[in-house]
Length: 150
Length: 150
DNA sequence: CACTGAAACCACTAAAAACCACTAAATTCC
DNA sequence: GGAATTTAGTGGTTTTTAGTGGTTTCAGTG
Image 1 (tube, rainbow over the protein chains, first blue to last red):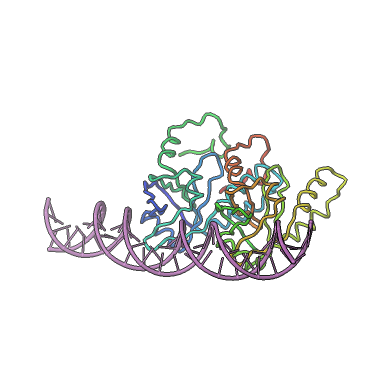
Image 2: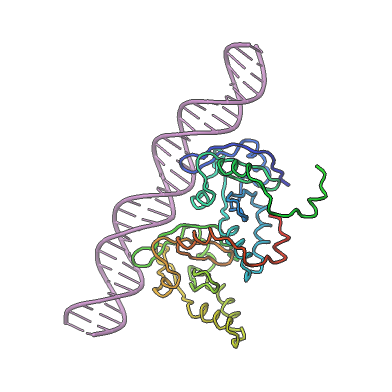
């Protein structure tokens, strides 16, 4: 099972292609032969999520199974399923990010790729740094988190 | 079973024809030989739903079976059944959207086609982006959704 | 019989995908 | 520590395919 860690600054070229860092590329080759799924993040942060294809299968199944007469559930479905795109790395180890995803996450040239265990997050560099500066007074801590000792 | 994913920006021409993106077109050919049903969405979002014909058969059966002394149920029946139109792709892979459906969903030139698993949603681009920017404070989260780890 | 509107057909343009070559950076060996 | 070799990253070019728009033909209607 994959285990993506660390953050990488990467550039997207004029055609919307972005070179996956070599380290990450190796992990992806091993895990899924370079077959990945890129989709939108469901919460309010406008970033993209990059899954190895077999990992996304679980996500897809879970999201499809939600009761879709509920408004929040429909929103999640539209965001996750409605943006999910299967992609493959090109001969140089790059992926072409579809225009709809590019504009959803407001991606321009400078991006950040953030390892998050079974998946990676893809942010516009600007938004990533802005998010780092934010504080999070509003929400409550789940009980499992209270018990952590890091 | 079909599995529509991802979003596509597409244009409708002056005759009301819209070109189904090649990826989606292939799936539709395989699933139902290009025989599809287009109908209205039942919830408050004014978009259209695009089903492979055999998948719509299930929907039709379920909706017909609803007890229709209830106002909400009657509304659902009128919207879904009353707008359902069977269509086929033309030689160039396009469908002609009937005028009533066009005006129901306020479709103009720029549209978005959104994969939602067994079906696709068709939105006016303007409305889709407006919906994306909405927040959804009002409704409650179903328990299955609380438990998700994506 | 003429006219209107829709549907099928056909041709062209533009965009995407695959291919290829170069530059820059890092690592290794002398 | 410096030079050489390998590898990562970048950009451009060509080829194919997808998308768009117009034209003709057929059917229905006044």
